[in-house]
Image (spheres, rainbow, N blue to C red):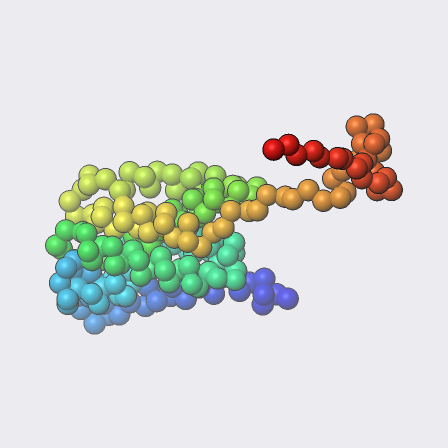
Length: 217
């Protein structure tokens, strides 16, 4: 029972571990991994779709993303237990593909695009689902990360605002693909009050009144 309860932590922990190991390896071997990032519209830059979210420029960049990534990923796996891996994979790849197609020609690295995709998906998914719990998740997302909206604008040249904006777009469209609107409750026999005076001529034991129809040519 405890394993099932904590299973939603597996993906966030693995993801964060991979990012930390990548950063540690880059510093330990005094290497530069930014060339494994996304370089838009160049064949060699396609590899970044897979590896760019794991690569970070410095410790500040790393800590900034790790403060949000495990929280949002944990929320995803907690809410969408059955298909969270499929959703995460779709967000991960679609964000990278959009950046490769539409971002400026420069190396794009970091997990911030995935963070924006997750936040966007959780927010719009909660609205689409139309449930109290999902609505609460939408409100919580906007309360915690509402200030992220400013990140989709080109304020600073060295920040990949395209990754932020395109990640948000990927999350928006993924919400419509993976989240279904809660069906409206259908009326059942229990919803009708046969004792109500309005139903005095129609109840479970009464016969249907015969009606004669006349057709004229």
